[in-house]
Length: 219
Ligand code: ADP
Ligand code: AMP
Image (cartoon, rainbow, N blue to C red; front, side, top):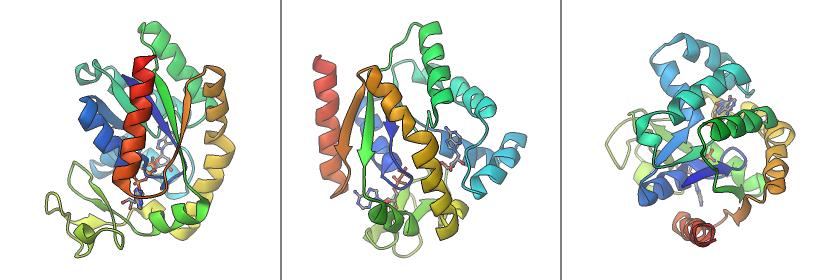
């Protein structure tokens, strides 16, 4: 299956993607994680991306599309993938459509996660990420597993993302509304959008997502 997850920063895309990709045995591809990995490896792409990310802006389309394309073309993504954070504007969605057509692949569904803005802000303020490669995501107050600053899954050090500061979050939300939300209408025209209320327990939202995917698969 090929799935796009869309929603504001902090909606829980990465959290849901980890469970869903595992249960469907498909790759979870997060462009944000790919950029962060480039930053920690001090690559040229990482240096370029960091300046945009720290300001809450999108990294330019050319490099983002090339990076996402390269990842989707890896052999481990042949069985399918769940895109988390890509496409993030209409130009990227058009480039992705072109890639799908060239590779004779199809996109099955676009899951749009809906969360009110005040909840998203609370989620981002408490987000803690593991420094290890798996980049497990926790919440400082919602999850006992994260309370001592240590990843409850692998024991790695938890840190707060540079772009999760209050000021940057406001900019990222603005960028979401102006640049990313229009892709929902773009995909509605293709009949691909399923909207999910992503408020409540993580496991209840996963159940809704899995049910929505099952309906798409049965079509
Ligand atoms: P996104 O990938 O959309 O930016 P994340 O998956 O990183 O969002 O989640 C943002 C924060 O919200 C994390 O700290 C995560 O632990 C927390 N979170 C995710 N889903 C929920 C939920 N259903 N209820 C409360 N907190 C959540
Ligand atoms: P995320 O981890 O999805 O919250 O993304 C963190 C940051 O990485 C974003 O605020 C952007 O600066 C950058 N980013 C991630 N995905 C994309 C994308 N598809 N296009 C442009 N920038 C991106």
